[in-house]
Image 1 (cartoon, rainbow, N blue to C red):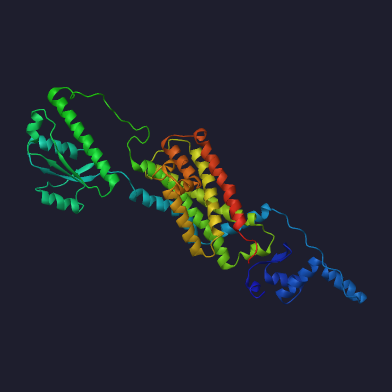
Image 2: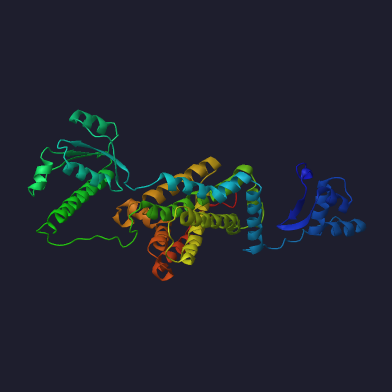
Amino acid sequence: MNEAERCDRISLMHAGQVLASDSPSALKQRRGVETLEEAFIVYLEEATGLAENLKDNTMAGVIPQSPPKKPPRATAFSLRRLLGYARRESLEIKRDPIRLLFALVGSVLLMFTLGYGMTFDVEDLKFAALDWDQTPASRDYLHNVAGSRYFIKRPPIHDYTELEQRMKSGELSLAIEIPPNFGKDLKRGRAPEIGVWIDGAMPFRGETIRGYVEGLHYQYLTDLAIRTYGIEPRPIPADLEIRYRYNQDFKSLYAMMPAMIPVLLVFIPAMLVALGVVREKELGSITNLYVTPVTRLEFLLGKQLPYIGVSMISFFGLVVLAVFLFEVPLKGSFAALTAGALLYVTATTGFGLLMSTFAQTQIAALAGTAIVSLLAAVNFSGLTDPVSSLEGVGAWIGQLFPTTYFLIISRGTFTKALDFSDLYPYFIALAAFIPVFTLLSLIFLRKQEK
């Protein structure tokens, strides 16, 4: 009661029913008493019928023996209580500007950073030549390599010692050795042998550079034969022209931006929901759940609803950033992408609720949710490797985590112009995660402290 005296407004309750709600001074004045405790006793007596019994029996000189009235039974589910918790959580977010800023623009800031700092494009590779021939033919060959968008020419190499030292230092990713008789061999119609040194410290990058060099070498010989003889070199069994059905420019940005949206929408929303529940445990306000008729389902859904709304605002911000800043075209149905995002953030916030049932501190909730969500989303959901290529436990994790399915929806709508009719199996899969996470949260969330 000493704490209640300091509140601007309080509610007096009995058996799950609100007896009165006003400022402490108004409650005392209304009952004509000096302390809030006396006011509460008066309200309690009125609610249980004890005041009338005392009055009647005092006049008759009889001590009342009848028990108080049985409190009304609370309903199993109340939408009003659920929305009350949702409104309370919304006010909590609104009154905490740092958490509100993190919830609204945290995902957008991360995507902005990753968009400029994370790429798998193998371009602007530095190369230099060790040219033993020094003829117009050798210079023309090197100009053909330097003229592509993949390579940047650096000062020439003079000997093998310098080549070794510049490759070790990381200054060069590619070194080309032109043999002494390069020009003469071309005039005689021979295909000259060229030495190529590639930095293979990163295998994927090294294999890509090798493919570039082989393609440029073949293209140079073909163009030279056409310029010299007017025909392509023979025998050529077939003309092979490769075209990409999607992402024709073969830019990693067009694949990574749609993939970043699912990763960020599982990382931040799940953490925020988990922190919102665990914060109640640390502050002790979760006692409201223990001592009132609020059910666990009302409590969980009420905590979840505001974060679903905040996550959808973040989703729209991510789409705007991808389309207008990074210029990744959205070729498919925006309505399908939005519907998938709504199901997805409902599932990911449900995952955050599940994680909160195990954590007792905000630090534990933050670390646990971040680690589990990032590991599953980055390693096992098809971000870099298809889920179909995974084996064992990794394959099971990929199939049982919602990011896998929304990743297909996001990439499909952005890159392949897919619609509802193409993606409905993944909508069904995302919708199935929602009741599963909710049910597991209900099972592990205790209504009473042990």
